[in-house]
Length: 248
Image 1 (cartoon, rainbow, N blue to C red):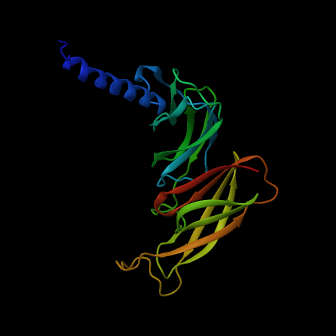
Image 2 (cartoon, rainbow, N blue to C red):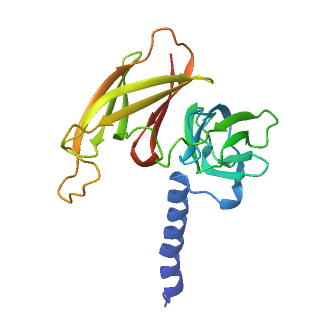
Image 3 (tube, helix red, strand yellow):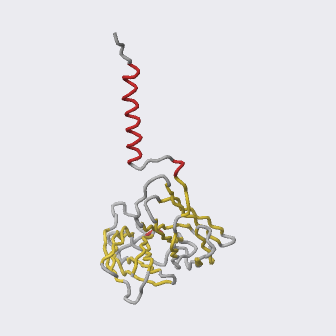
């Protein structure tokens, strides 16, 4: 009389399930962590808006492109030395060597917030490269963070070759969008300022918990004579910004 081997009966399904889970994980791109290395990101451009003062949240924008799908987004770290006026930025990516890669060229943009910096000219160095960019930080003429009050911008949508649409919210329902001012800066940076005005009777210092502002949209066109790769840097309320790199 043959005896059933209950260990084998239960062991086979367990092994099948384990193998199935392993193949499923690999199919979904889950591989051994020791095959993933953190490497310098393939950076190809640095954009530095020049209008920051020593009471602004200073920012720089870094661009690059991953050559294939074996690269994934990594870390962005910035160390500011206020005494030597040097800003060291490290941008990394995670590279996975033990998988089949799709040869898809994928651009990326990283906005690096540096916080409030002392006035002066800073040397910006990315991934320890010898070539440095200069970032000027001016002395603020007043205690307020900006010369103007800006709208709270949520989106920047490209409309055609040189047209763009701003979408967001004005800080009070009685406020108006006065103008969308454009300032071209060295280094192929176009700074866009959505300036808010408060008409008579609309006091921005009065708190009203029921006033959540009002939505707005505004169209602007870049000048016809600018060409090449530009950063569109849109200032927003409370030190925020929207950034987009475009080819013109």
